Image (cartoon, rainbow, N blue to C red; front, side, top):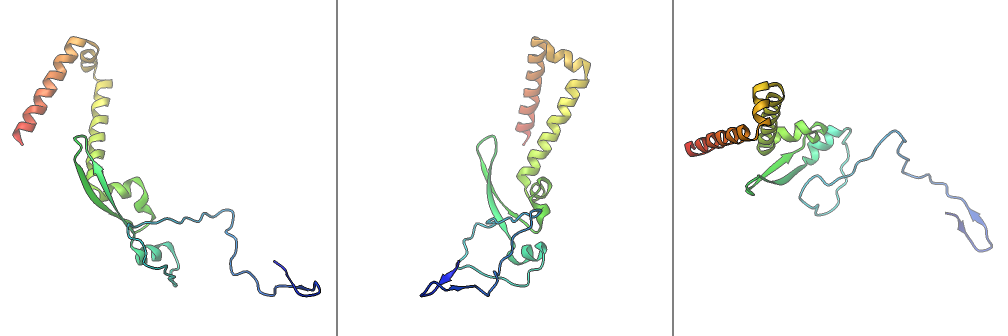
Length: 148
């Protein structure tokens, strides 16, 4: 911090630091948003806001999804803004995730039916009737799969 010369003379630094502290109400995020490693570090000037950064670097990530049967599918997600990191932004880019979202909606709809339908509730509470209902559902599933 201090430079002392021969004889112990103090030499004060005249230059000020080129960096300032980040204010307490701000967050700095640094993350690798692509699969590609940079060949050499790059300093880019003139990027005035977050949209300029996304437009310049065009971050994207290749992901591999696995379904219930173990089959995998690869998809590339592209990020053009901060909203693309949210649930809707990621889901809108992925056919696989859209399928899961639709499946969840169907399950939620069925669960609502089970909870509000008194006849269906009585079927679910009786073991023999529940097994007959499951057999009927499995038969319908098999019929649909055979039709494909």
